[in-house]
Image 1: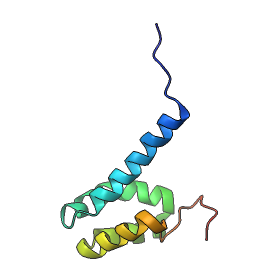
Image 2: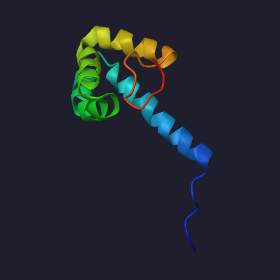
Image 3: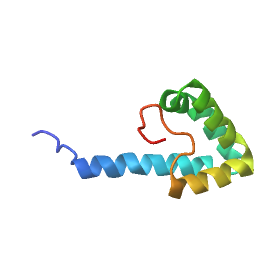
Image 4: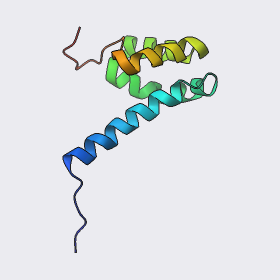
Length: 87
């Protein structure tokens, strides 16, 4: 007997949950800085070298990163991804 394949909806919920978890972990005032350092590589891959370093640098500032990520939960990224068509 084979395993059940996850549905598209389940994959979307799983991926979305990871995005929310990353943003929430980054928002912890001083522990969030450690999370940002660990995730800097993924930011660089998604946003390019300059954009990824800028995004990670802003997230690493304890209370500024908290405010930035809180706004981005509702507004979207301030620094768009490389492959994003949005300006």
